[in-house]
Amino acid sequence: MGWDGFSGDEVAALTQGESFFAAPGERVCPACGERRLRAYVQSPANARRPTLVSYVWCTACRKFVGTRAKHPAGLIFSDPLAVLSVAERRELERSLVGFLAHLDQLWDSGVLPQSFVA
Ligand SMILES: [Zn+2]
Image (tube, rainbow, N blue to C red; front, side, top):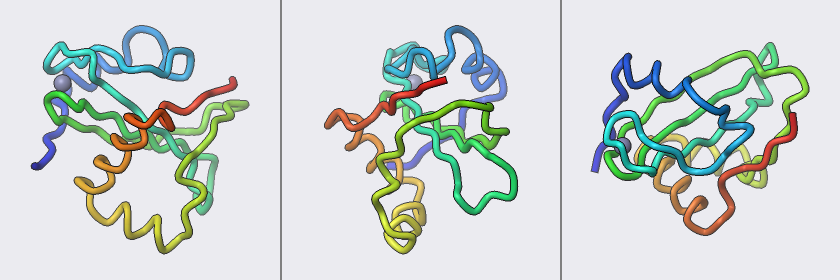
C-alpha cells in the first residue's frame, strides 16, 4: 500500500497546537480527523549544520510529510534507529513504505514516540 502527501493546508495545520516535543503522543490528523498522526525525528550525523529531519505520518489515512529544519538549540532526544549500522539504516530508508512500516512497528511496540528534553 502506498502513501500520499499531505496537502499544503494540511501541512500548515500540522504546525498548529502544542509542539510535538512537548506532547509526543498521537494527535489528530488534519486530513482524516483520526487521532492516528505520528512523528519521528532524527538528527543526521553527516549534516553540515545542526539539522532536524521530521517524518510525520497518519496510520489511518496513510498520508506522510517529511521536512528538514534547523535543529532547535538545546533540544535533546533519543533515537531508536541509532543502534542500526549505516548499511542497515540505508537499507531501511531505501523505501518509504518499508521505512514507515518499521516506524509504525516501533510505535506499536512502545519504542516510539521518542522522549524529548528541551
Ligand atoms: Zn489521517
